[in-house]
Image (cartoon, rainbow, N blue to C red; front, top):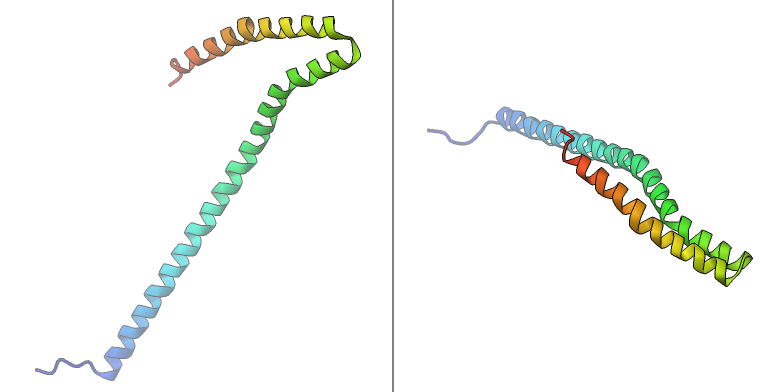
Length: 106
């Protein structure tokens, strides 16, 4: 029994291997492309959201700074107490209610 391959069989086998490698490389390029598209989409959604959240958190220190600079220490103390009361009472109740609503969503 002759176990060696003929030249034509070797050429066909090599051609199939090269074709398989090319298909694999194309699939990898498609996956990399779709991954980059997904990252781009996530960044387009998340960056404005993060910017809005940071802006919401920076409102109180900016306002306190303006009150302290322009009005005086008593007004700054009043603003600080009002801000503390608002944060503890209003925002905590709102955040708690919205968190409770998350359990009702499908």
